[in-house]
Picture 1 (cartoon, rainbow, N blue to C red):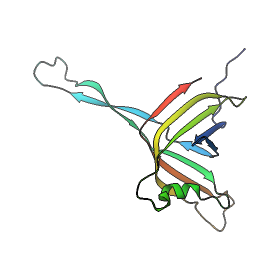
Picture 2 (picture 1 turned 90 degrees about the horizontal axis):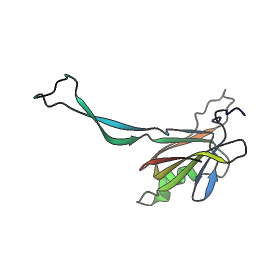
Picture 3 (picture 1 turned 30 degrees about the vertical axis):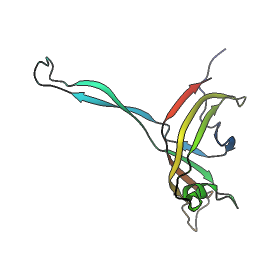
Length: 144
């Protein structure tokens, strides 16, 4: 039996034990910054030594269609007027044909730094999309 790669269109986003529908998820990027060092005394090479440094993770962007009487993303961004930010742990699951998770990204302590409404135009024929950009304290990846 042939093995095929998993398509990107079947996924779910969850927080607070609730699945939330989003049309686009991006920013699941992590990198390790390189530290360069060269002492100038006994280096046989003119190239610096390189060692792994701090881990860095991009902000995550979530987009979804606007529906009536649902202002949840803006309320989270605005924190309902409270002085402290509400942090949430997110789970983003890539699903197979049967709806079972194949790869799961767990995002720790996420909170919104940007909330964007739709681009409105009188001649447009698109769905109104809102987006939220989240910072976080790390991503872990699991395969099942």
